[in-house]
View (cartoon, one colour):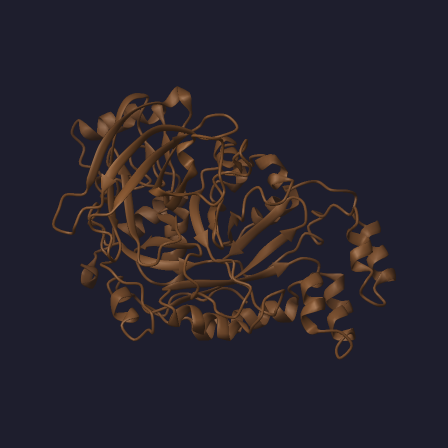
Length: 487
């Protein structure tokens, strides 16, 4: 069962209307002060669990709670562990019915085929065009390599069926399920070894519309096969979590940063915040991660397009609006630049934030830890004051990625790095990375010398100043449709 198409053309301005009836809506204007391109801000949480794996409540209750809490976009992504294939026919949790707590077995086995179908039906029932976007996903859950969220896929897969599980100790754990021994031996004997992340990437690249993201980077010891880059995943792996629950993932330890390792390895991902909720109060606890997506329409299609464009930010602050540009290119995009000053602009707003002091840290590649090229101390402007602008000299030879991290200058981080590192201030938000590309300079120069740029170039979108592939051209055509009632 695939993700259905939107139920009709959707006015992005309806985001505000859709929130009016909610118990605790995210507040604040939804239009960017940097780009007048028809996009609107949608509050999103793309990582949640239910009793279909190791969560506490039903998926229908999860979507209802997330909507009532003021989210515009939500995904249920239960753990996919070993429930696919032969184990789905064996039905170990059904055999244990009445003898063990249901959650005990589901926590080991994870999602199964019936749970996947149920999640799809519930998501379809909860989805309301222009008001609330409900998405079915799953979390590919490997005990050592790491966890990967997958959205917009008509099917699901787990580490067992993709040969992606290292078996040291796992067989003994699974044998706690009565009667599973012969079936487990048959499965394990058929698997040649642990080939790392490749089988999952093979599955993702086989076609379809699936998108994926790295979850809580650095928590599992394998670091997604040391973040070995697979070029086939350029249009599939779109995110890495900067906030998970209440945790900031800038530092894996005082000496390493999994977030920096991911970007250094060549993954052009945006930065997400998620709650990773396992309780039954989805969307409500303050201080947990969430994301802001700049969408052209509030629908599954609109959310997917924003993720592919990396047009989103990570935060733990309810009601935050953040947009950012570098030399006119929106966050998540490619900046035609070799060396010299880059001018950043930020639109920052949240309830009660006008006049608040905030540090803008410019993070750059720095080896095991991110370097901080500059810290801009700002006072958040009121709505009738100019947006924040500042320039920083950057050299593409020092590394291609640039991340803007908003931090509270008066509060320490909850996951400290090395002494005196500016990253030891508590993070408020991360903008998705910019990518410096000297090879784009000549193309950008031709555009500036006489040809009228396309709409996304004028808006500083992710396609500015470079040749488009077919997928990007399709996105560009979508972005240039008449705005109609969206203005």
